[in-house]
Length: 421
Ligand code: NAD
Image (tube, rainbow, N blue to C red; front, top):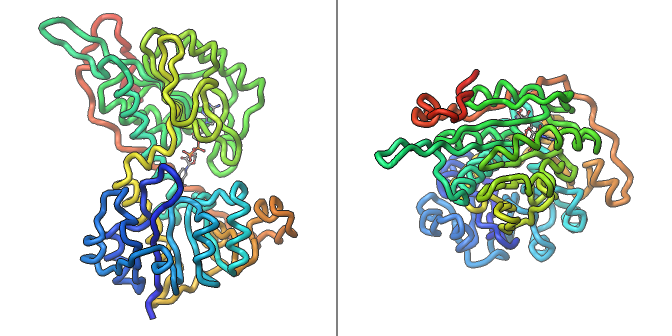
């Protein structure tokens, strides 16, 4: 009996992605997984129902029919309580869940005896890279942030030498050089801007430079935390950072902020005073707008005008590039299924670091300690420590093609520090 994988339309506002795309459905069919899709589920991501049928999937009229008898449900956003009510007992569910912030949904899923996996929790180890949906979606976000900056700026990104005169390249500052920040750097460089970037992690310097951008050095200690992430910084540290970055921000046409601390409110990197210090027409793209904002003045989903400066609060950027965001997400899900489906049977190995690390609820029992604590349940004993595994090396986006007009032949006064590595 093949595993029945159900895909329903995302119902959370503003979500255009879909968890499985036709190409991935066809591949899954060869591995003992039959995909059943709600009609129109992928319309927002620009895939037609017919494409699923051609891929060997079954298209059914509504969510209830898709979920009936499902073994596994793949979704992007957390299911809503109404959707959980339609689930069969004992089903497995995978999505982004942010379980500590979604305790009502976790509780409802547990009451269904479900096994629930959250892609936010996937361990970031080499073996899990092909399933790393945080990274795949951050790649889309960084690209979108670069494009959004270029769209909002009333200037060219590249340097132009024309018969009418020479136009200098735009100066872009990227703050936070994780997966999304590196992609924003690569995108801004491809468009010809002169890019500088800053991060609190020591490893970021080399990654920034490998993309041909200049790393901004500050007289501050690095803030490397566990698992390759930044640790939470003190208010004093952030105040010092703001002070030291003030001149960099003021000199930039564009500031793209992507700084995050897992499970915490995003740190404030750009204060109101710093915004007032920017020049007429400058643009700030705040990619952390959904998690509190890196800029004090950003509002999620809004373009805020402050004097001559536009502050763009990007929300759910992958949803605005839903075709490829869904394609990458679906590949992540399929790679996870490759780990838990054997010979057409769902047989997760709960001794596997990836399975146990991602699992929030196992057959109705909340096993993720922070979520259990948030629900006031007894906190499960931690799993036996697995053999230590080195965190995977980050995958920096390919260095963009050099933009000769911006970087090799700058006009007098243009930034000449690009290309250092
Ligand atoms: P993230 O989204 O949590 O944060 C984005 C960036 O913000 C990080 O680079 C962080 O250092 C930076 N930041 C935090 N506070 C800051 C501040 N005050 N000023 C400037 N920058 C600040 O991070 P992410 O993109 O998910 O990745 C973080 C780390 O995880 C990186 O080391 C990355 O290479 C690593 N990673 C590993 C894997 C893997 O092993 N499979 C996959 C993806 C990412």
